[in-house]
Length: 516
Image 1 (cartoon, one colour):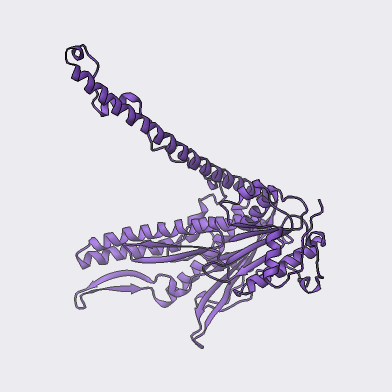
Image 2: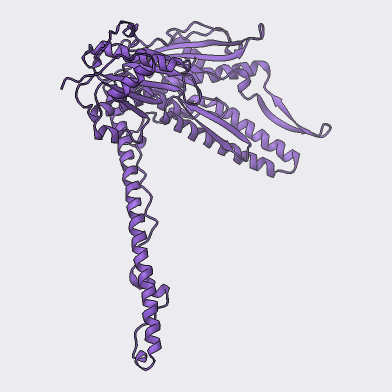
């Protein structure tokens, strides 16, 4: 169940002494995962602080027993936990609505500075003692100068504040517009929008902290089917202790664990619940009529004790239609019998990790990719790139970037030609620091590239979960396009820069003559 991750963040908990690098395919997924992990650590830290405050070992044993029983109960209610929740995404809650911080710089009037500098009020006494008038006038001037400087600083600070506020609100508006586009695409049945939606639903699902949620989702529009490959906990990941007692002879706390048969049944129950819960959350949350079937494949990563090798196996596979699944009363079912009734596949006790063949597995081939054409070797001297066939130009750009990326061990694939503003090529760079997924678009234009083309690229990047976008053209980019990409991971390459790159890789006789 190999998955490409393009974003990561390292987080810490000083009290627990824990460090973890969270990886995700997109920024929204990264934010969800970070938030969830921090919440888990916060709960763990609270328990640890209570544990550290206990001095008597008998009291500590009672404390650990109570925690263990709560933990077992939590695992027994994995399915029930979600049945009273509405798993549908609230689109408004996906948006960013937090207002920009208020201005921290107060604008004071002149009277404020008169008071600050203790400027006395004008009085008739000044006619008797002229030095008092001179003192007042001197202090008034100091106050006035201070006030004038304050106005200058305030105007500069407030102008800077307004610029930052405008930038913040613009980004927020763009983000919220992307949410609206996502909702629109989801409701119209767009494949990527549906996959993203289900990923968010599953990421929002709260499990016991020992379960590290890892899954892959694929939507098959031709079958109206969602396929989920879910990484399940192995037996060693699941708590076995049910009681803790203080041993006076050993002067330590001793754990009492479930018996072998009891634990095997407990583990099997957990896997059945995760399976049913995932199917339930998808059917309940996906309110559009584009999903009729869910296929759940549960995978485990483990060490084969017979060979000592790392292994990965599917141990449970279930296919359910919406109609049959929604007729089930999940609050009253026997988990195992329910899955058997759905014709689910598993071999004996799940704790033995016996593999089964997935009913329908995720197709890992991107059907957009096509065989690339060799254009470079067929270029003639003084070839005008601006007059090439648009499809040949896309393949030519792909070949150029293949030479560039291959220096770092990256892979470049060209997609089906469509002239629809989609992806022309995708580069996968495995470098953990500067790598990721790069979306490349080639525009054989004779006129200035409009800002709409750059916006389309940015939208494509978000849908693809790409790290960077690259837009290549034979012409030039307008002011609006250059302004749009200022704060975005997008590189614009115009005609002259394109010729420079070809020249760098040995193709020196090419030219671009625009037909305006």
